Length: 590
Image (cartoon, rainbow, N blue to C red; front, side, top):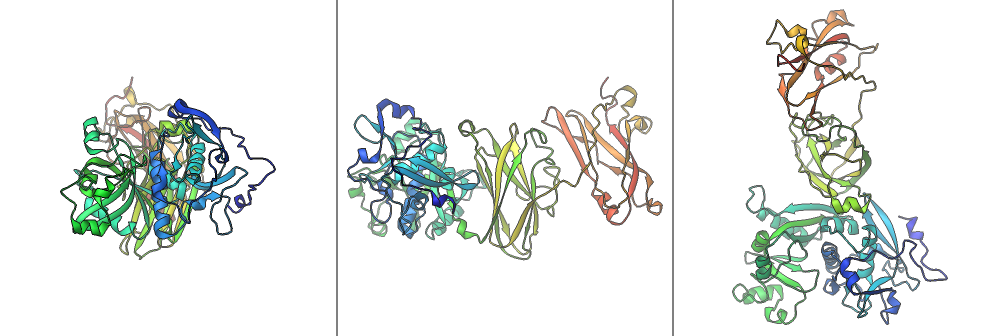
């Protein structure tokens, strides 16, 4: 970023972005007249009006970016409350006090966190204007104030234009601030959902400046929307969280700057407002009812009943240590669905300082490389956490995951590992997708309250051989060992380890159609150390398993011979083995 700060903002002519004007949305096109510079629209354009920005002034218009505008509102509220330039600090040029300023040359730079790293977005100051000379983009009610319109333009440029497909505030706030995104689905009927615990977290962390909060509705019927005043699938900024006389209340802002909640604790509610409550909140419902600015109080129970999800973005300053890795996952590596085999998935070892309390949060960010990808949003990702001593995991449930992940179609997925002195200090992190179809690029970032190391788990196997013409049929369908007469008829393979050292790893993968139960045995024939003939006994893949696979009707049956590793460490080197492949069915194919 230090190199980017040398960007030149002055020139002999007015700056025009070489990428041209942004694509307009259908609603903008209805009233569109032209693109104009602020100097041609306002008498005195300014970047900011006053020392800090004001969330009251933010107004969304015809661009479908309610989550982005709600993100601006909570960021502006944070600046005003805590006196820290969270959102305005990303706009350039700036004066000597690092306050963004109006540039008469029309060139601006905005810092956004996109695809795992901070990036600079260069824009000019052309803004869409309607037939009535009003801006056709989000703007400030303070005439001539530009920060809202220019931030929106920079973000819309990244997203392909004003014809924005929609997003959520987790994504938008992370792009604007770099704060850690977390999604809390509101499920009152789910025993896992802890409504009281969530509110306690919001109350404590909101007032210490450690979290930014928005909340969104899901689908609502027309009758419910009319009765409640809530907009379906719409984001709202959370401006305040209070607990007064055991009443849990939140103050929300509709990005439209009009249309408020009609229920409990609305400005028209005559039942729930008490004199004590009005004084505590410095709120006068009668005065508020005179003008609809889209800001309202609502009780937490109504939030849980009518809203769908909380979006929290956490201050990364909560964590003293951080580290990230940027990687690619090729589409052709591993099965399409990893419900039964995760051995080919990207895996990472996480080692934390032992015997300590604290937390490590893992944020997986899938890179968005084109707007079609963002619009379709068909990639589902997650992170699985295993207590596996930092070693590679091959089966999704062997061992069972310490923290199981839900695959979601968001670019960000957060998992939180709570540490205490009795916990393990080594973990395995596994990246997982649902129906992997495309090569993806991603960033894995860890935040820790204590020292840790994060590194990719490499494959120890340098040599590979594959046999693809194996089959069970007629005389070779010998069945399992419960059929001693025919069992020896199963296909056999000779495996020779051509190595003089005693530190070798062996991985065997057996694939077959999903409807059959298959397995194999590994039988030693000749050992390098003759005195250890009893040390390495016959190894089996275990009981014949009936496993359903979802990758081209194949299963990947993976065996990692941990006992063999143990023998190797003891100096017993296996130089010759036979591989018996068996089926419990009398006939496999003909």
